[in-house]
Length: 197
Length: 197
Image (cartoon, rainbow over all chains, first blue to last red; front, side, top):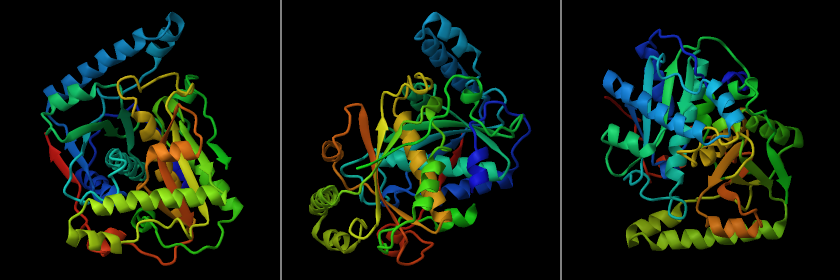
């Protein structure tokens, strides 16, 4: 468990080799075991194969990334632009992950005061997939530099779905046990804040 | 990994035996390895030892749980009220987990279009703790039937903190590899929705 956690890193450098179908099936099956509020299992996964849709995702990422870069001062901007923040071009498997915000499953249990626990459930399912992928020697990168409304429209998602995250999945170009942003000196690792009260 | 995922269940029946400090230290260290947007590590954990504070959390849970029960029709209400939905009375270790919504760490990277990825990062840190706890033979229950504003006030949390979840941690009264809500016939397990597009 410790090894999997330690080697589970956000991957942005992928080989283009396809992920075999039996492995993809195991990743999907792993999500079935994720915790969810009221056992509501609200994650909805789209496996994106259509090349035009992939191209549109790349374009949305580039627009959001440029806008983010423009928000930094000059020195930080060049540092930011040197970072590789997504592996959309090379990753063989793309997953667009949404959350059903009005699932019949769970019958409303546990989410009355905190409806965001539905999205939280999807996040834990993604994290489950991420860890199992690592155990299969597969890397995952979570692309968050995206406009959720644009993604929702692109995939013609039902009104009740909320965009949660876009995942690049594939074999990593290299192994790494340290966060890339730490290695690139963008942000050091800091220990968990933990206080008694 | 598969065994840990399968046996990782929401626990609401705890023994009162304390969790040894070295185990607690390992749980905290595990959170350090969780993924976070921009490596921002926004989770803030309060270990709740004060008996009055624990009593207040129990009272907030009871109020929210009664309100939730009142929202169901008569038949469902009795079914709902038979469920045990929290182990606050017995669990020896209580963790109130918040998210810093304006962390210096990460320098804003990756969260411009989706600021909710900060909460998502905390959720993955909680899930990491949950899985490592299971590997240590320790159970975790996530209590979501709580009013986040009341929790924020109770712990006098900084304005920039957002309440994410309240965890009961301890040795489970019994082992179980099926979700309690599935076993209690509240909500069956359904497989992951996964479509190609």
